[in-house]
Image (cartoon, rainbow, N blue to C red; front, side, top):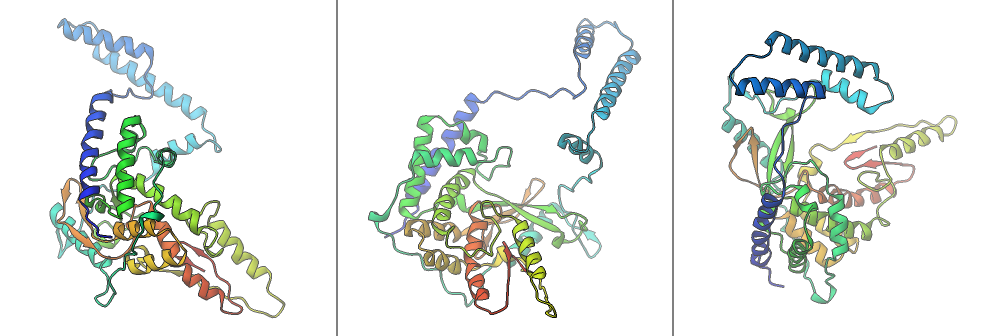
Length: 395
């Protein structure tokens, strides 16, 4: 099938302005939030002060006004302290907000004793991230499977509604500035437009180019020096529309592979957690016979998500029998990806990412565990060896 991105790109370019316009017309403007200790008495006092200002006269003593504010704040604080409980999550959130260290909002990189400018920092980080996500020169080109129109299953309104409910509120948008809350409030006509875009993208195996671009925000890891580039964890902001589509694709892929994955993998799977691996290791130690020795090896793959080969992902999906239209869409989703690093409001130049799964994406973790499943199969063939996976952590 000949692939041309014009169809999906054109629909995406039409949908995004429509969502922005609808949001601007219908979403009310926010108002300032009053302090948590604000009371009706303070509202009356504030109104009286404003009236005095408007009439250009002095009706209250500023010292008395400040005293009322301070006394009210102290009274509210004492009330909150009296309600603190070790079993109350709100109490712990209050304590953390007071004592937790404030993370730096941007790097403070230093070279030869001189701090870099924001632009230089963004460029330096971008160069490092690109080196991590560049495939080896000898790596084979990705083979995208051919698709047949007879096997295409259109995305339904029910699937779209489920994916919309699963969207996380309060998350930062991607480069298109479309928020999850805006998508959740889409009307019937707007949903049909989004559904048309999604079905066009899946049917043709074309992912809009803007969905493949991400903004990387470096966040300082706990207790790490801000002067080192290795101390920052990259978080990628991508298109919310793409994340919505990813949820639909991920659910279909999971329905196909979940029963076929090796039971030793506990990462990014429903009703599984690190406790599964912990219990497995504990049981292996307790079951050992008298006189036998048990040894454990803990392996953490460095930059595993950044370096996984795209061709391996496609082969793994095909070996699981995933629908060819889904595999073709995922293959196009992985190739031709670009990103920029943002330090404060300063952006780096575009970089190309030719391997790895997109950090911050919905599909990324699922694609990773599908790819490493073959390693789990091989380990299961070794007599006397037991193992457990949690994503890229192997025991």
